[in-house]
Length: 86
Length: 417
Image 1 (spheres, each protein chain N blue to C red):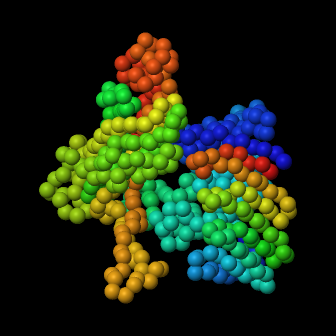
Image 2 (cartoon, chains in turn brown, cyan; image 1 turned 180 degrees about the horizontal axis):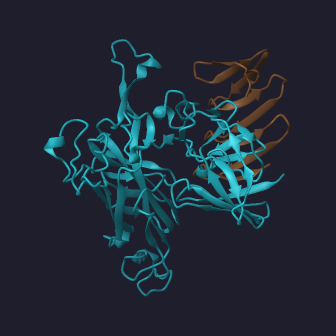
Image 3 (cartoon, each protein chain N blue to C red; image 1 turned 180 degrees about the vertical axis):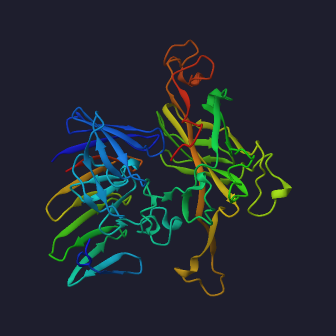
């Protein structure tokens, strides 16, 4: 890999150690977290958003990419994933 | 919308098969009989593929029935795919069940979800600060040598079995294999009182260090890193009853009530496993306590009695015993937490201090337990349902035998990974 392929990215963390901003060149990725500090939305420089929805056990039950691709998950009592719809 | 249903092996917490929305099996997986499995092959649409891994356990090649490679994979250290196709969801760390969700571009790793681009978990550590102070961090930022198949505790292997140097104080949970082997067994117990539905098993386990030609055991080859072996046991039970039930189990230490379906630490760290017969004054200095003695072993036994209030119809008891280092260079790393750092201590009141285990070295684990289902003999006249309150369950090892069984998951050798 040539040196030109590398680009320095600087990430800023908040007091909870959540990665809030990642800046590479002129572009900036922003992350937001829900009340239970699970990663909820990641916004790409072009405005695309990746969204995660979490249940009360802090398990991911829905994910959606900016492309519209999404998956919904069902869990059993042991918090094991038993199904996915996509 | 396409629906995929996953069927798990609850013992090893690994994938067994997948079905589609109408219940048709779409994939069948073969796993090694160890914790988190150890994916061997998959069968999709009648085509069986065999996995070949790198040292970390990431899939590098798939081969077909004729041993011909037909798919290859490559990743960077954090799991970003350099080259991959869609022939399997088990890619980076695939041997341990890391499941790549193509439509979400994330890895489902049992309890948590991992994002390769960020090199972090997307939710905080459910174990809080057991692993590190960084709640979203993946494997202490050492992804090339450690993994975290549970999503709860990261682990890694060392070359201790080959006689490499000491681990030093562990950070997190470190597995150092090759120091010894387990042997063990189990026998069912006679119920002590049928009227309150008690039953149980006798279980014994020995962790023995191997000897080399010079009589040196697994802890004295190039360094002797552990003064004392201990066992720690986690337990859980799952049951269904006809009434609201309380599940009371008598453990290594004290009677304890455990919530059904959740893993619970059984009485904490139990120093049952000193090296009986192995202690030698010559080596009785810190870091070198292990006598080169063929009887260098640590032994424990457990006789859990179970008392369930109600009429259970299905019952499973599971326990996982791990041999860990109690003291010495590889002994438990404790840390002090000053709670007042986050909650200001009122004036005149001393700050609260608690101790947390920061790291532990695990030399291997064994799972054991028993299953029980409702017997057909309920009443004194052997008629089902004749008098359900006047008879207990029948099961293997007890009078009359029965439909239940005890099991020990490959107790000889290393279980787990």
